Image (tube, rainbow, N blue to C red; front, side, top):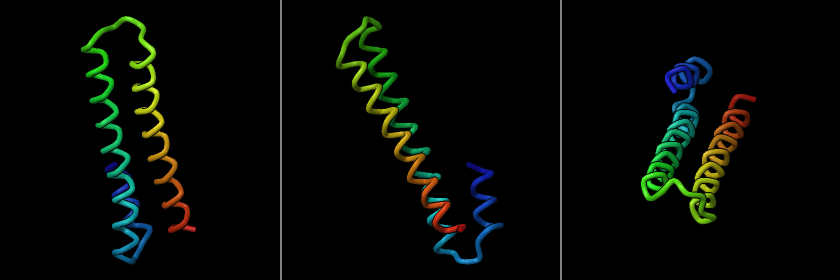
Length: 80
């Protein structure tokens, strides 16, 4: 995150572009925190294999992947 913020300031001159680049990184961090919370709650409930627990963890991981892809696309669009 820190490297991304520094890169946003170095690579852009426009404050709107900087806000988009930094904001996309912040969204990835937020989604990762929510995913970690979901996984902690699922693990707290029980460690036995359950299809709903697996689905909750898979959907949380998918949300992180989508946020990363979105951030990557935003960075490519702005910097290229």
